[in-house]
Image (cartoon, rainbow, N blue to C red; front, side, top):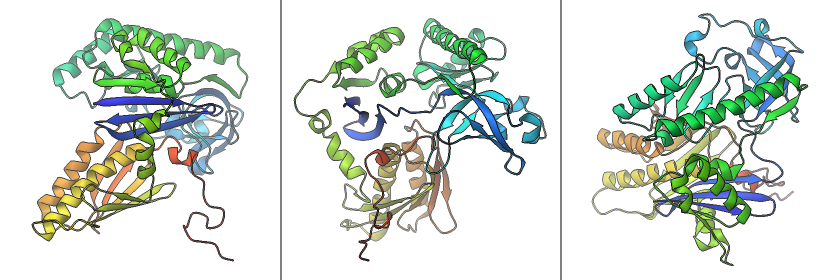
Length: 411
């Protein structure tokens, strides 16, 4: 059972997704600083770096955006040259071009941008120049994949690209075509604005948190969407009325005097999930250490002593840990390289089962993940795509005294 909760305060909007009562996703967006992912800009090339095969582009933000050569070439791999050209053959300082943010500024880095444009809708993602069709991997039935591919081929024009999202499963042609036409119209408006705009300037802004969550998360198996703000409630209903009217009835207004996240135990779950030590149901625990690009997770048996033998105790603790790690990666929106130090297991089949468990759990993640496998040192290695700043950074800041080392500064 899925439940989506949206809390709107004066300066911030927060969303929380519960699956079977457990918090699995949490997002936050400040009113004055909405997400930049998906925004399109007319930019000006400031500098071209042959040694990095990249360029820096002024798009009007505090720091210039980074554009890698692969993101300048045609989005379809089969349409790219066999030998990658030098970035200096494609761009020069002063050039003006349309770019889209694919990764927000993080730490000391500027945004990463691309010319592989994509505009997401309710049922599909429109890619005006991609010239290929993609189907969500989460749609597993081959007959349905073939049906959707056939519909996409019939609907798209020459040169256009389309990705059928997971939500498109079972949807009719009329709904898909309506979504495609809306996205085509949005793209035409962007192109028209680009002709007259001066660089740098913003041409298109992706939807805010409320509409994005409704667009991406609300499906027929969602039990309810509860919002504590009337304006946001009307926004959510209006979007569903246009794209999925059968789901509009799932949206409810919360008007209890007790805070929404307190009422449904979300605040309590958040407090536990963002600790450096996270307890498992059996009594084992995780120790979680995170840097900008690397996350290390240590699994311990803790209070759990088991009842059969050591190997079984270790195996059961590791299974619980795999489930919890997959959930917390989504919840904390962790990106980059992830190393998990599971407790050593003697039986090879147990090691194999832990990999399977982890792979099965991350299928629920809307962000791309890859389980690489066991390293020679017996550590589990995986990666998760990073696009936005961690939600916890909105609420926590590095201690000025210890600089994040967790020690008391006594000098």
